Image (tube, rainbow, N blue to C red; front, side, top):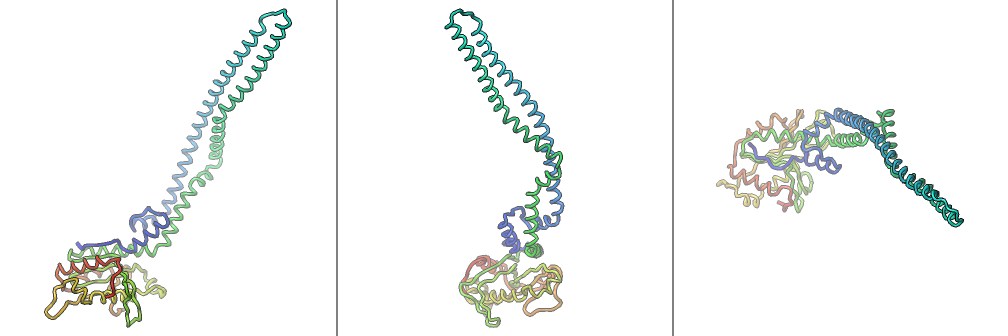
Length: 364
């Protein structure tokens, strides 16, 4: 099986966009596509879930209200009994103070003051105990009223309660859908690249595939023919084969997209990358570094072929320096070319490219 390195570029970009929007649910393109496909079902599931939650809340409120009703009645009886017992004690003291008969004016006056004291005391205790009683059950009665109000609201406005319950979850689901729909180009790009990787995996272990290959140059490479200064290059896949290097761009475009003049030409894009890679590999310094077995006529050339793989359809035209293939044509095209490198040489080229991937290197 072909040795594969790195995550495909479109998938990395897609995940980066999602993470920046605090979306961490998806680990693969397949999961993203499933979400889009099943969005209507997910939406209905959210609504059904919250409908069940409100139904459960209603049933629980009904039980809570019944229990609170019983608890409040029990508390009332207990507090009323405590209040009654305390008042009875004071009345007994009051009655005791009036039992004895005294002829002395001073004693009569003292009894009078004592009766007044206990009378006032009874009144004060009745008032104080009543306040204590109200405070003791206030929390329970407040809770009872809140639950009863909520219960009555659900009974009479069930659909509104459900809508209010699911509004935040549904808003988040819709936000996620809108963001993902805005990333369709990356989604279908990642899907196309994934299919290319799966197709190339069927090659033998003499092949090496590097996904999302990129390098930058400390000094720009000048392409005189295009009057272009190349500072960096990036390509979807680099396949290192015994027959040479295949630079592969993947486009999951529709037939309509092929005719869209506003889209950047992948032919120009891959030619630019190919020029930089050609300059990089056909340099004495690189040949010396790679230690490729030299022919007695001189150093071996490292052939490079530019491929654009289209998932759905391809133009009828042929293009200079670039071969355009469908996915089904890819493996047979790669295997058509005869080997010119040994397994060790192929490994050396792959190791060199893996070593410089995502790095800045000197100008060739």
